[in-house]
Image (cartoon, rainbow, N blue to C red; front, side, top):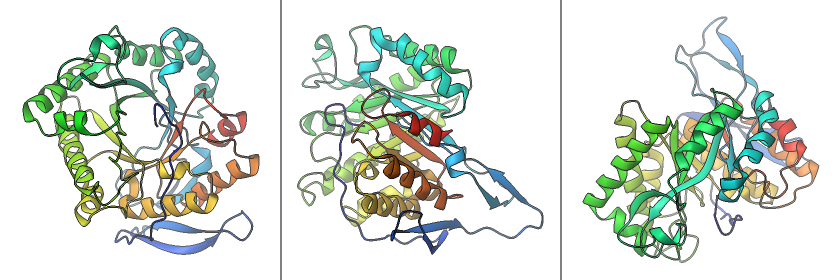
Length: 362
């Protein structure tokens, strides 16, 4: 998700390779279009198949039924299936009760089971995401509002939507450049304080995890990709360290990370960091692309690159898709049954989040 500009331009990326998945061509329901059907290689076990439904929604939403399928059991439990609905800052604050009331019927019919919302940031000098009173000093972890009420949003969400709802507040950074962000990434003392504050907040309000949404100019190679290689590597390295520390906390805290480019972008080091990243989910915003072929290509590339850690970004807030275009995106998700376990939908109630989205997610 992007605070100021919700639409991200995706890049063309060559198909990646994968050791843990096999692929075959499967015809999509969309005329003349084809999709890579990704199938997890599993050992054969007589009478050990089970049906499941997969969904993920992270300030965006994916339907459990939309990706329902059958896979061979391997003796290990499959990754959790999550549908995450994402909520922007504008729908919180004085609008929180109305937003949760509007979402409650969709939670009751299992259109989503996770709730992500804009909440925290690297407050300090030059960060326009934070309240004016918090725009001084070096980067530190804080609720973006004038009062520290961000944690209570998760409490209210579970009360209104159900105690089973996972809560994933965002830690956002959408400044004009990376200088301020690097003040945190390159400073061990500040990073330790930031991490400890995030852990304490998560334990106080019982968060499932945090979503890291760092979108400073050039961080994902949106502009000047060659010169941004070092920045991308630095950011991915810090994200990995942050995730490891939150995973080691007791109780464990999850971490997901948003990226605006494909898994084949960047230097060999950044590609290796993506594939080895310990985060729970890598969420692709490149699949926000309104062009179906590009959406399909990015989804397949990410699924091959990171397997079950992939979260598919969907964006009804970005463009007004036709009913056929929305349906085709969920058809591709069905083709990837057994490989994709989360969808992240940006954002409710912005843009064109029509009843059709909820129907397909349920």
